[in-house]
Length: 149
Image (cartoon, rainbow, N blue to C red; front, side):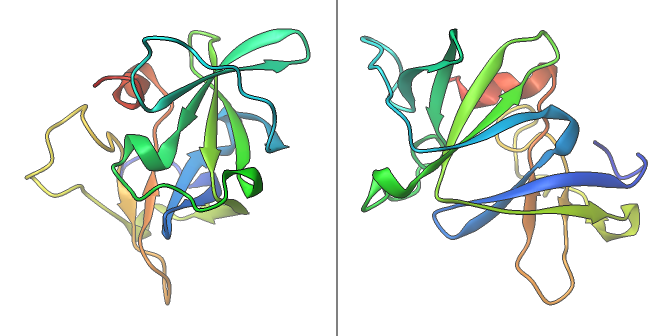
């Protein structure tokens, strides 16, 4: 997504009080908390894997990856299954799911120049009227920022 792209539809989600959005075309499923099988020697934000209808999906704790305080009760968390352009699926563990929003391009503002490219949010941050900022997460070739240490 870029400020010059067409209006975007984003599925919103919350982690640690912050609002995030993922393009609706990349969201494959939303699940209640499910059994996560630990992955030894994985980075701390990789909780392990889940079984999604016979398919193994890597589970990523979005709070932990963004250095937010851990959730008091992880059993209330939701898993948002997103798909990378390569076809690989990931389960993002979030606190709650919001709505699907249509974001007009005139609401976007660029990332601050102090953020390193490809490190945090490789997309733009739309300023929502009367709301906090929504961080748009690009599930593209730069999705690897979630997994990098």
